[in-house]
Length: 106
Image (cartoon, rainbow, N blue to C red):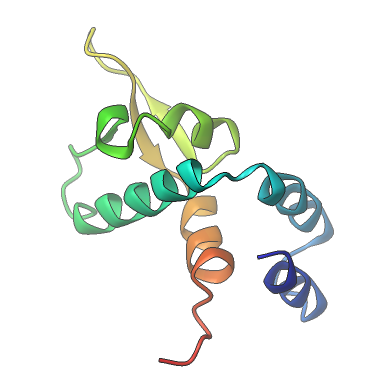
């Protein structure tokens, strides 16, 4: 992931600020958080047409609060049913360009 990040910075697809932020985040991503990231992206893509859908912590192995700390998700206010989360543009960019590498060969 760090190599893909360096390539994105080299071709100027990301700025220095985001490069440094992602370079700080990547070493902290455990397999537990990567699994949560994958589930968060998959579920939000599947339900992106439903404006009332928000991710719930139990849907993603209870990793959403940590992913929110990295800026991949944001908290959506709810009435007493715990935190729900929405995906940020950072989640989509990171997942497609760094985690999954959209340029890979099929």
